[in-house]
Amino acid sequence: MDEPSKKKRKVEDTNETPGFTFDSAASLPPATTDAAPPAEFVMGMQAPTSTETDNAMDVEEIDLNESKKIMLKLLVQVGSDAKVERAIVASQQLPMLAGAIAGDVEDGLGEYICDTFLDCVVGFPHKFDVYAGLLGCINEEDGEFAEQVVQATMVRLEDALEQGATRDVKVLLRFFVLWPTVKISTMTGTFDTLETLVGNVRGALANAPQDGKIQSAADEVIGAVVFALMCGGKALTETKTDTDTDTAMNTSEDDGKENEKENEKGQGKVRMEGLLLKIQQEYMTETRKHQALPNPTETIYPDAPTLRDCDALENIVACLSETVTNNFSNARLAERSWMVVKASSSTLEEAETMDIPSWTDRVSVSNVSAWSDIATKSCTREVRLFGDGGRSNTDFSWGDSYRSKTLTKLSVSDRFSLRDVVWDILMTHAPRSDETVSALLRCSMPGTEHVVLETIFKIMLEPPYLLSSSRWLFYGGIIVRLKLKS
Image (tube, rainbow, N blue to C red; front, side, top):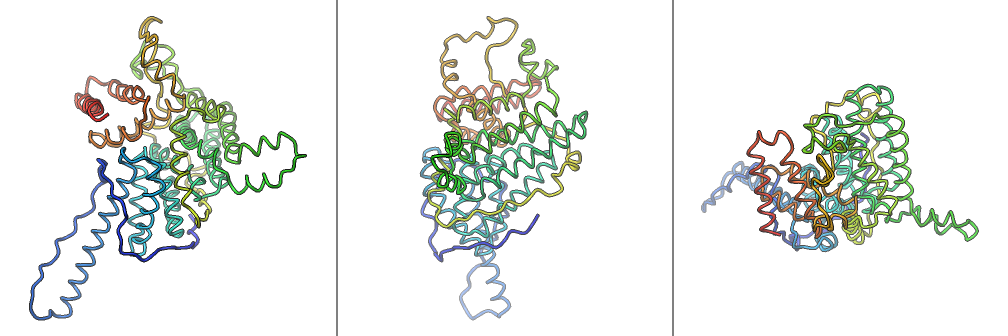
């Protein structure tokens, strides 16, 4: 990839630590090597110059390791405390943390912070909006380092695509689509990047339509893009770009109502509708084959034909289509992400957008076939919640239950997106129950209890569930802890 261009750097000299603390149950990623204890202080004559130099180096190494541990803790715990409103996190904590990051970058910790920052993006899938807002604040303080993070993000995306790590692809794309709102990239650059990725996997499958490996990889990529748009679509449609402003100013009354309607949509809404149409027509209809689930052991309801014949990607794309048509009405998760990045963006005054690095040959049409096999599907797994099904219509009849009433109040977007995020949290933090419960409480909201619990049961009861008692203990412990803490 091209080297990032040099950008502005704005770092204020200060010895003050960030004016906030995080009281959270979030755990740290794999710990760094502990620093050696400081050497004993001995009063007396001045030591030889070589010893003095060695001691100074030891002190510097200790300070460096301490700074790393402090920054690691801050990056992990930011936005994890469910008691702190997200608006406070976005508008107050993130700008202060960005200032601390800029200072540590000046001290030589840039590479470490960049790697740790992206580890947190991947490791905490429910905080993609918080980290997007933080990147925008970093761009305000140190544009050169923000561009380094952008460059590293694209490299990680390509690594994940090559390795078949589609869960990482999905989480990174959720983080990626919020960049225009926090003034990291332009709306045009963001959608051009997504459309190129979709076009490349579509072209690879068109060249080898009978290759199941390529279709599996292409389906996962399309699913990752769709989920990203579902979670970040509200921000994309609401964010007004410079192009929108210029168009509105240059539009006269004589241009007609149709132009006014297009201007009201904004560039993000227009580009998202275009990308969705491309996915529906060029990929779903013209290129891929319908994928059913003929094996009854793949569902906990083997006698329900509607579950056996379930194409997960078709359901996800249909969900996004309905959500876009309804202008993300009642899409509370997408709304929450929009409010986080909007609050963060309101603090930005000097941030400048940057060019997104182009995909390399590793993501070209000809190289999709060389990607690793996908061991576990993350973007096209069956996303249906519990509900009516079984041998007859009378089985599992919920009637006007509390569950039925609460689920009907949720948008289809929330049911799909929250279930997927919960699944990712469970897979990421297992078997650490406390960290899992903390993340689940942070990502959920009133009225979504059934989605969270049913997702846990869905994973716990999947065949071969009778072969693993530890799975029951883990998920049972999570349910008990959720009850105690909620």
